[in-house]
Length: 400
Ligand SMILES: Cc1cc2nc3c(=O)[nH]c(=O)nc-3n(C[C@H](O)[C@H](O)[C@H](O)COP(=O)(O)O)c2cc1C
Image 1 (tube, protein in one colour):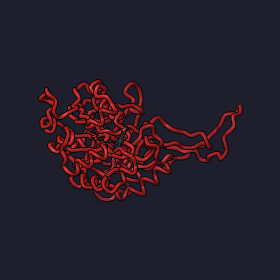
Image 2 (cartoon, rainbow, N blue to C red; image 1 turned 120 degrees about the vertical axis):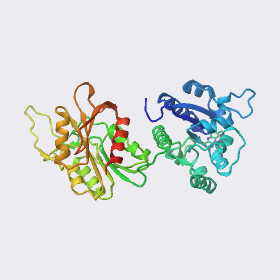
Image 3 (spheres, rainbow, N blue to C red; image 1 turned 135 degrees about the vertical axis):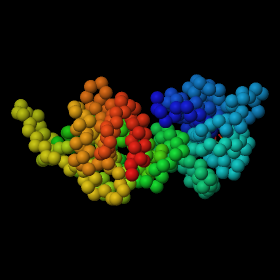
Image 4 (cartoon, rainbow, N blue to C red; image 1 turned 180 degrees about the vertical axis):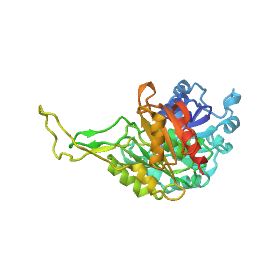
């Protein structure tokens, strides 16, 4: 269960878009991750998807009309307006954007939107011509100016056969936007946070490479936590399985040399640098231009050291910038991490174990310690990476 949605009440407003069926998956994910999801469907939405689907995945009655004869006290519109931590309108039609922008309250959802003071997050979905129409654009601008939040729409193939902007944002991008909107304490607002994430692939020939098992999950958790706390985030990502949050700037860098260049180009504009990538310490000296053919002899590759990215960033950091390293160790974990902290002149290091049952590489959890130059190492135990990211930013916030 993600810790980001636990104990939160989310009103999911579903409108009459062809993407309405995708809101079922959102309701399901939010519920599985600990949120109480109250779903309200417009009349048009109910023509496209059956309310019973939402009832089944969220385990809550679905609100379908304003003047129901027996309104349960918990789902009466003023009660929901006051109770919800967040209103997520997904998919949001051109119609609901227009009604919300102009304060029209002619059904349950639009009326409750007026009555709430909770954050409102719109995930628009519509045909490109409808989205780019000056009326819709003016409505979006007006809602933004009033503090409403938006995720998407994305570009791509639309149900009507067109290609362009208007697709409902991807599920994970909407879930990230919900996590960001639910966190009200923006203590990193105005800060620029640079994060390295994932593995490096060091080429041997046109198809082969030397890589490692890093998934990019730690980098993703750090990026999302920085975004939740209001920072402007750039992720320099290796070829990881896990996609960084879409709300971050993402720079892809496959090799350690490319990652080094991407980090050094941004280091002097950063307030915090976190090096969570599993950087390749060595690269192949001579990459074969042609595919190396199989034969019966041993293949000898000469490996040469790669640039030390975190040491270079720490050496050239601007005054006040905090540089945080990660040490993945198979033995003498805390002692080795402590040496790295001092040798590379870091402000903080997070030590992880990469062997045995508590192996952090590729996993959602890992055994972790936080080390600072002048205090005793702190053991965080076997901890979820989402929670570890929260601890890391709590500590950075306290660094002088
Ligand atoms: C099959 C179908 C798909 C539709 N898809 C969309 C859509 O993706 N976005 C949109 O803004 N309107 C779409 N509409 C039009 C809306 O349903 C219509 O504007 C309606 O009045 C919206 O009402 P609501 O905002 O109360 O749900 C669609 C209509 C139909 C029949």
